[in-house]
Length: 398
Ligand SMILES: [Zn+2]
Image (cartoon, rainbow, N blue to C red; front, side, top):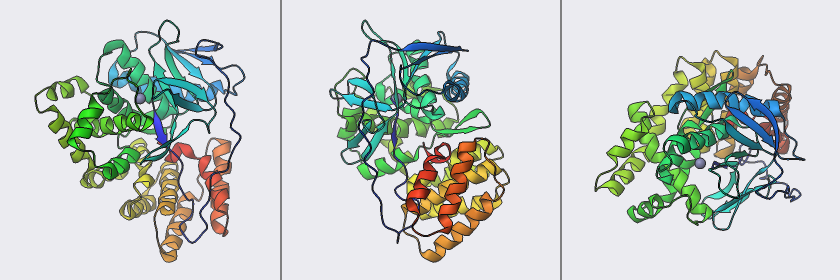
């Protein structure tokens, strides 16, 4: 399962009125678990099944899944079987205390998670059974979500008995990153769990409870999300220490009597503010894909230091796509924190320079970018700016 937080709160810094999400029509898009999927296209290593009546762009799913499949195989080895990918347009609603997943419209898929806020579940992987199909179920063609679910699919082939929290951690690390010129570049620093876990302050007992949860257990959406967060933090600590995905070695290391203490220690180590301080140096990496993947999502940390780093990196950045990524994340970051109008004018000036001459290959993204820039030159066009940001989610949404 791949939960994600929602869009930036504001597209402009304070002093403009806050806004409310529009109340859209609540329409559940049909479907019972056992029927209706239409097999539409065969790709190398996976097959696309579409929900009848859903507006699916097969090319968009191909653009997400082909690099995702390559990335997962490079880290975890070749798939033994072709993966069935079930696509519709919407998200996932969890029912029955976290056991059942149903396909839903976008709005039905937003869960209000106590203490965490709204979370949307974008996809899940099912191992299949007597009455259900196996494969990936995904409501939007997002490459990071595709990577996350393909990690589950691959691990189900080779390592079906991994602890749930740990498996979610591996999936969350590899699924965090960015598409750069058709290649999935994993980053691993997932900013939503980082911020939330700092606020949660999980105790030894909480951790003991969360790591005992299995995929077949009935748990709340909140626990479900926390299992992902905890797994991410612990696996991230191993990942940055070793720079690779030798997850079996990590599990072996956790196999002693002090298991819970060790998990707690590793989580705390990730939550230390030094983590993003060190990680953000990757904005100066020689690979533009790494710079792009690093920038993506940083706005979620709601940090002034991070905003300054993004603005600084933007001034130096030579790659237009990465510059756009930095600019969009800086705008989103500025919308999340309180900054003075003087500071805001400066950020806007650097963003305008950074985006000058940037051309997006995707005409819809180009239109969104132009709209975004126009909205910043006028007061009171916050809604327009937020809409425009939505059209550029590839750059900021993780
Ligand atoms: Zn998952």
